[in-house]
Structures are given as C-alpha cells and as structure tokens.
Amino acid sequence: MADAQARKVIEMGYGGNERLIMNMGPQHPASHGIFRMILTLEGETIVAVDPVIGYLHRCHEKLAETLTYVQYPSIASKTDYVAAMTSELAYVTAAERIGGIEIPKRAQHLRVLVAELQRIASHCLWLGTWCLDMGGALGGGATVFLYCFREREMVLDLFEALTGARLLYGFHQVGGTRYDLPAGWAARCRQTMDHIDKRLDEYESLLEGNTIFLVRTQGVGTISKELAMEVGISGPLIRGSGVPYDIRKLEPYSSYQDFTFDVPVWESGDCYGRYKVRMREFRESITIVRQALDGLPEGPVSSRPGVKSVGQVKLPKGEAYSRVEGPRGEVGCYLVSDGTTKPYRMKWRGASFSNLAVLPWILPGHKVADVVAILGSIDPVFGEVDR
Image 1: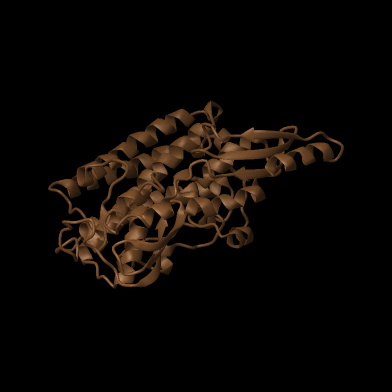
Image 2: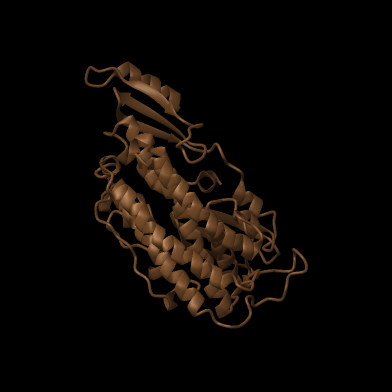
C-alpha cells in the first residue's frame, strides 16, 4: 500500500514541483534500531512521512503466555533492552496486583533505586547517540558520545555487581527483588552519583554554548501542548511540551510517594526542550538514588520464599494493568490470569511505540538533515516498538 501511495504522489506532483520518494532505513545508523521512514520530498524539504515498523517483531506478548510468572521477568528485559529494569517492574507489579501480594518496604526502595539508575544509564545512551547522530558538524558530537558512554559504563558496573549482568537483569520477581545489595555497593553507588553529577555540567557547557547545537535543536520538531495530549505521547516528550505528566507523581508506585523530587517541564516543545527536560531528569534521578540509599529500610527483599521451581508462583483468576514511568515515558503491562502458573493473556503498552505516532505531525516542513535530530529527540527503542 505504501508503494502504491508513493507512485500516486509522484504522478500528482505538488505545486508544479516534482516530488521524490526516499527510503530512510530500515538499516540506517541513526534509526535507533530497525525502522523505515518513507519520506516524500520537495528538494530537501519533507512534505510527508510514512513510518514503517515491524522489522524487529519477536512475539513477546504470545511468548509471555507460554512462560510462567517466574520465567518471564528476564524475558521482559528484552522489550526495552536499554531500560530493562523498567519493563521487568511493570510486569511483576501487574502480577502482584492480581495476587494481592504485599511488597516489603526494603524491596520497594530497591526497586526505586534501580529504576532511577536505569533512567540515568538510558539517558546517557540517548544523549551520546543523539549528539553522534547530528554529526561532526555539531563540533563535539563524538566527544559527548564518548563521555556519556564513559558514565554509562559506571552505572552498568553497579548493575553487574548487583545482578551479575550489564544489560538484561532479571532483578525483579513477583513479591520483591531477587537480590539484595552486596557489601560495599552503596558506597560505590554514592561515589558514582557524585561523579556523574559533576559531569552533567560539562555536558551542558559543551552543548549549550555551541551555536550549531542550538540551531539544530531550537525550533526544530516542535510538539504543541495540544498535539502532545491528543496523540498520547508521554515521558520527556510530553513534559518537554509543557505538560507535567509523570506517573511517579500522579499514581505513585513502589513507595515513590516517600521521595522528594521535582517533575522537569519545558514549554518550547522542540528538540531543545526535550533535551532540557532529560538533563534535569538526570539530576532528579541522582537525588532519588541518594534518598533511596540514605533511607533504605531493613528487612527482607521479598515477601515470598526463594523460588525452587519455575512453576512455584501461581496467581488467582483476575486481571490488572500496571504502568510505570520509564526513561521514554509510560510503560504499561496488562495481564489476565486464569488461575494457573502462566498468564492467559498479556499486552504491553510501550512508550516508544506510542511516542512514534507524533512523527507524521512534526517532520513535514523540515529538511532531511533534521530527521535524525527529531527522531533522536524522541529516543525510541525498537525492541519496545515492535515487541
């Protein structure tokens, strides 16, 4: 259908000018995965875009129906593999709501701790790759990329010490967490937060004093407040358009109500506004991590005994929807239980998938070179888009 539409557009023309249909992706270094955009161009100006997804589909939702509640959290990590802790948390929270399972206070704080560390690691990857996407003309794009990966590696070192893994963790389980903090981990985490906190000033001085960066981000890819709410985007995208929507504040989960933090908001709605929101989120996450370490309660990390069989956890019949605030926005998991050890049905609400819906509204009128800046500011992960 897309090819037929493309031929029709070429035949019609636009204002007497010839239109060109160009594929951007699916294999493109700035597509953040496997993503195809069919761009309709007049010269270098985009007049229409047809996003094409589905190249990475792995049947996650059907796979979940074949795995027990003990097995799937490690697989949930593979949806948004840049923020695996977030996906795991959405899944186990939905299961716990069906079962009416209470979570120990220490486990709740540990969940907040790793969620905010994951946000920091994810934003490091976003900022580094975004600057690299915009190219050498940015004057420091590769520098920021290397700096951000340096800091991200420090957070992944903490995850490795905690779980034994650097990308896909299996940290959350129904009833709490699988691991407690090892000796010396808290002190190491505090040192890492102090280090990253200082580096954020360096990132901002490199970018916000850079005229090329400002020209390529300010007034580019603007999402109005009305459009943001109509399309249903979330996370830094909607907050970058002036809407203070954050699930951690509006519907606190896992004891977020016990923490003091602000919800960053920027009014401009452009690439620069989304950048400013994420830079402030870095600092708010660091604040939450410090609070979690300082106020970590004593006690068990799970309300259930150690699992000795993959079929040990069985939930009553019921259904529940759980949503959490991931680095890219609202991540939701809808579970239906039939009373066995496996879900009867499962459905993901991926932030990346929903956020991509805004592309056809904001790309037209921009140049081809702006595509990578706008797409990078959305920060999609296509494991979560296609699932």
